Length: 158
Image (cartoon, rainbow, N blue to C red; front, side, top):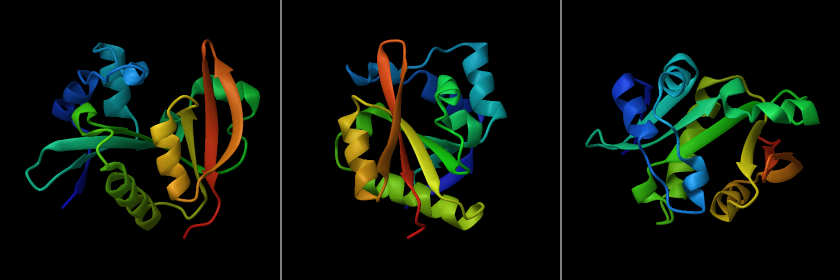
């Protein structure tokens, strides 16, 4: 059983210390005041299991966008932007479908009924495959330095 809770300092500190293996180390965070403030002061939520163990997190709204994407017109349409992160020890083991399905259900039940959008690093084939299973399709690409990002959208609520 999974449960969603509002982000708290204990969970934020754990998330900021997560270390992913290459090439996913791109998603590693730095533990500093700015990163902690980001997680605690924006629309971030944690997903915990029945033993209250942190499974992952998600965010919605502007904090789920890659800021430079605004300059490329990536975020013009009215969508709910979603960002997710799963505990590194759980990635690549087939848990993504249950995790992401749970998050999408929560968002559908608790927020305005508009289409969904995600922004993902183009090299992250595992995540892209997961999102495609849920009906997300590629919308556009843009670059930030060495990394190409793509937005993916789900226009129907089913």
